[in-house]
Image 1 (tube, rainbow, N blue to C red):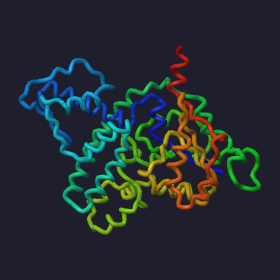
Image 2: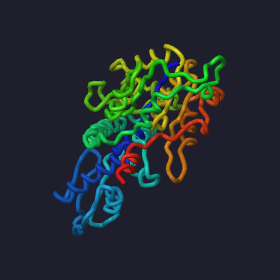
Image 3: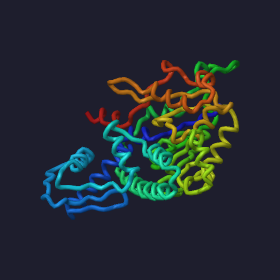
Image 4: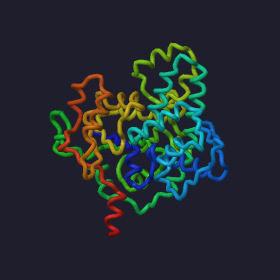
Amino acid sequence: MNRLIIIGNGFDLAHGLKTSFKDFIADYLYNVIVDFEENDKYNDKLITINYTGRGTIDLGCYSLEESIDLFLRIMKTEQVRVTFKSDFFRRVLDKINSLNWVDIEVEYYAVMVKNRKIPELIKNLNSEFSYMKDLLMDYLKGQEESYDENIYSHQLQECFGEVINVDEILMKNRIHKDRPSKILFLNFNYTNILMKYFNKIGGDKDVNYIHGNLEGNQGEPIFGFGDEFDKHYEEIEGFNDNEYFRHIKSFEYSKNQSYFSLMRFISSGMYQVQIYGHSCGISDRTMLNKIFENDWCKSIKIFYYENENGNDFIDRLNNISRHFKDKTILREKIVPLDMCKAMPQPKEEFEANLN
């Protein structure tokens, strides 16, 4: 039996990189505020900031971690006028303010659906999204460069190659323990942090940067929305305007062989899925449905995140369930919580060893 290992953003976060969308927005706003302080004005594709003529403000000392709250406070002062050119970015910021997190790809699609009957607004939205994508990739390059290669987990490496226990699969005539015949890492991240593990694992293995990588040598970065099952998608197809598909992942996948190679792997024989740091949200629904509901997929094992407040196993399970049309199949494939384990946290292990 083969193994398909899904790697998501939580993997990079566990290695000390600040790669969440909230981290990215905080960095963007920090640079905006610094620029505004230096020039008494700011202007880009998303926002403009100007003094109103009622005096100036002294922001004092502030850190990157405070930038979102500081920006929200600046918005409320009478001395400064903040103008949002982008309804999309305003939505992103509102979500961070209210929920303390955001999925930029989901918000992009939500704005598209909201404005779907106004082609000019869709064109503007795509331009804003492209601008934000460029900012994000530049930010992630800086995060990748800051990675401390001493942050590494041998426990995590062992998880990748662990045996497939017979109790994890609802199949007859299985031997008690079985090493995976082939391992495919399906890396949804744009960074190369995974490669340190990949290079140390033996056996028949491969890696697929399904969304490309920062250098572009594994394909140009793909950033957008990928849920063709959404109730509005068929309506959007009927508009006969290709601008609506500019950031739809399904079309981006056709630019290289990565998606085709994935389909070939999941059609080649039985496999177990392991999930590390991927929320399994709807922005990748089309692809994840193909992986999870495939007849060759025999087991889905979640390596959940855990801290002193509990774990996110049920949240992950809820997200995964949205990719199944047949919930009976879902229940047959998910490895129960008491047979799963928390994903090792390399940065925490590294810091613990320093003390």
